[in-house]
Image: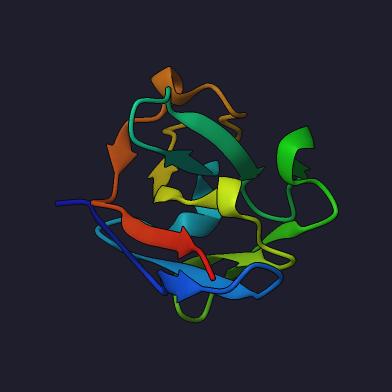
Length: 124
């Protein structure tokens, strides 16, 4: 059974940083495309970053470009979203997701497995 567990969210001041983790069981993240998504109350789900399988490419959404990066630790079977220079508009519930192919992109409907999310609140 596939399980994705996000962690690392919390309350941070504007300009601060957080690193979100997505730990997987039941599959090997290195074999699949992984995406990070966020959803704020009253807003649609937004893809912010994705990572391809193996030594695959990464893609960061324009809305967070130059502030967010995505990486993977194969030894821990985990994917990370490093967020810096956080803004109040980054406040949302953040989810990781796994596509059953090597690349999922930022379209949420292609992703098969989802975590439960971790809340990020950026506020002074």
